Image 1 (tube, each protein chain N blue to C red):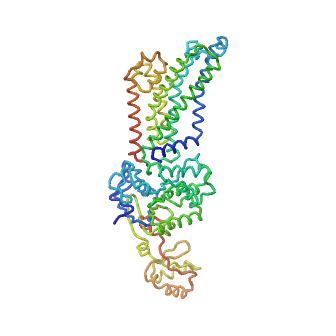
Image 2: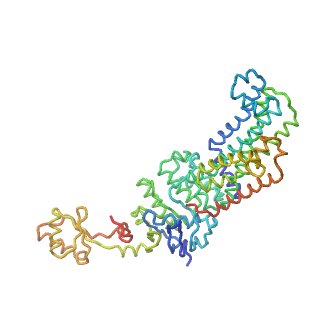
Image 3: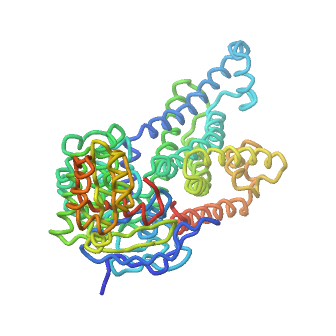
Length: 303
Length: 262
């Protein structure tokens, strides 16, 4: 099977610091791959290695079936990218910045620039200097440059960074349509896990340079621990009653949480028990662990 | 559009939209302006004495003769030192701005090869320097005519023109190392430091009598700042400058191709 991205034992060290440690990534064509990790986990280093911007200390990188050479060789006419913060020439307009990218990508169609400006909602500031753009519009410019040449693969580092809520939804829908309608592979790293959760079809979790988990959305759904969340007017009395009944109760910001299967599978019994002791629940819900919870559980972080 | 013309178009657009070309043109125009001022002072000794330090400097530089040969010498010597600084500033800007503006990463994973972009930057720098050198000569002719000094001949103008161009070329050939320092140092400050260091060393080494072996001293000696160039420079001097150029160019290309862009 050919993968859009394939790394084998990819490692990168900076002196004594092991930024990437034997990372084996497999990203299928047309997937939206959410690459998650804490600050300094190795997300950006991975993206830089995929783009040939850093020389791996060990291992190999293949992108769209082509080996990425440490000398800048790669299938770059088919790859769009946004690495870390978007950057642009401040004294050039949005259109001129994109025009440079169009020419360096050898795109003959002069309308490509106008098309991507429209697509990314940059028409109102197309002739404004990039140095005068808001953070959100600068991010849109970065995304426009990544998508200008209609690539088969886009590598995006924090694509929602700096965007307002409407912009976040807009970009999420754009990326989803690229993947679902045009078969574009999207590899995105993000700190905003709820955003990744809504769009990604596959996840990789990197921690301290190691890929500690790789799974698809369905498997993630299965792995997320369910829990019973309970609210009551007299939380202390309710907690005491449940503890007396032998439940392991965790209280968290005005809500009690039960994770035992006998509680999750029988919330009606819990409700009856609380009514009996005179502290009826005001809210009783079986919730599933969020991606953020799952991520923190896996990486040993705390909420 | 091929890769090189695309890259050169991009580099030219960046320069055109910047104020740096205008500033460098204004800066280099000071050279004939100051040369003209020296000529005015030297034409009138009474005023020269009244001018204090400036007239002393003018006397030192020109041996007190206000004519076209002396004026062209002033331009050449100014191009030797001033050109070296100004051209290094241009190179520091062309390469260093990609790191200061964080745009270098947008130039690395493109169908246009990295070395093509580096070469396009050098071609832009060469054209820029050619333009500034022509500006010095043309403005110099205008200023010289305006201050009305004797000793003009078309042959002298022709010889002086090529001397100016040769000094500019000698300075240009030292710039790839400035580009390398700007790239590896990721910004403007390291190449500025490098330029100050090499200029200071060039002066010291000229005084020590080894200037013909030190590439950064060759343009200064060629400009005639330490005497007739034929007595001070040999084939080895030009060969060393050429080697510095080739070594600097290759090093810069290799750095852009291979170094970690973290």
